[in-house]
Each structure stands twice: as C-alpha cells, then as structure tokens.
Image 1 (tube, helix red, strand yellow):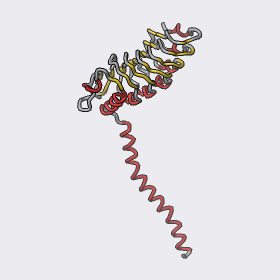
Image 2 (cartoon, helix red, strand yellow):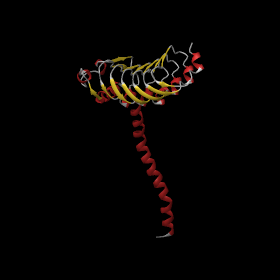
Image 3 (cartoon, one colour):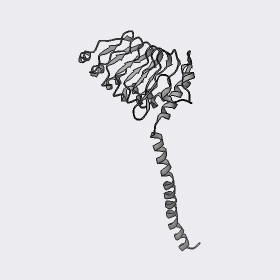
Image 4 (cartoon, one colour):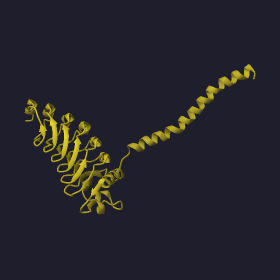
Length: 234
C-alpha cells in the first residue's frame, strides 16, 4: 500500500467515526427523551395500579370488600374507601379503616401523588412503613393506628411532607427512636405515637412544631428529661 493511500485512510477514519456517532446519537435522543417524559407522566391509571398493588398485599379480607369491589372493570373512583377530587380527577383520599384487613403495605402507595388523606385505622396490617410515603407531598392526614406495624419509622418519610397536619401511629409495635425529621412537618397539629416500643429521648426538635395542639407519647419506653423546647408549643 502506498504512503499516500495510507495517509488518506488514516485521515478518513476519524471522520467516519464521528459521522457514525452523530447518527447514533440523533437516533437515540428522541427515544431517551420520550422515556424520560413517560416516566414523569402520571394519571388515574397510576393510582389504579398502586391500589391494585395494595389489594395484592392483603391476605385476609373478611368481608370481601376489596375482593368484590376493587374490580378492574369499574372506575377507581367508585371503589369502596376511595375518594377522587380535583380537576385532575385523581385519588385524594384512601380510607379503609375498620375493614379487619390483614396484609402489608406496598411501596406503590407512594405513587398516589395527589393523596391528602391516608387512613388504615383499626386493621391488622403488619410489617414496616414504606419510605416511599415520602413522595406524598400533598398528604395532610396519615393514620395507621391500631394495626400491627413494626420496625423503625424511616426518617426519610418526613423529609418532604410539608402539608402534614395529623400523624397517628398509636397502638402498633413500632420501635427505635422518634424521627428527628418530624420537625420538618411545620403544619403538624396532632402527633400520636403512643403505645408502641419507641426508645431514647424526646427530641428537642419537636419544639419547632409551633402549630402542634395535641401530642401523645405515652406507653413507650422513652427516657431522659422532657426538653424545655416543648415550652415553645403555645
């Protein structure tokens, strides 16, 4: 092979590679963008899949409420315990209290992004609280009281719940320390964590919850002194 031909070949290879790379990028970018957009789009079908994930986790439904009523053939907004509202027509309230249900809580609950009320009072749900609840930025009322939930309460849950007004977790078997991140829930008015197995001290950061009207911490294994910052809760 001549030197001239070799030189021409060496000069053409980078150009060919760049051209091929540009073609590949031009082909892939629209699909990458589309995937990103699709990942962010949520609608009532998102809520439906989250609720069906919850139904699949229920192992005992004594009145067959979910089994018979939460049907894929009917509108989510007509299901027992579900309230839809707003111009987006999304699930705003999930209240399945007093149904005698047994099961665990799926992480998909965090996909109910328009939820303002989440109430599972007086059932037999067990296992841990999913940290995906941190995604429910619109949540105002969260109640899992009178169940059999266990383990520590994930600190991350309260990192991003700026609208939470009521937190009721009393009468479970939760343990560990009281989450310091509770102090980020500036609108909290009622805090009920009594009759669990919480240990450690009462965090002084609770004194930052200046909207708090009710606080129940009895029936735990807390120790130490009552922080003087509690006096900020006028």
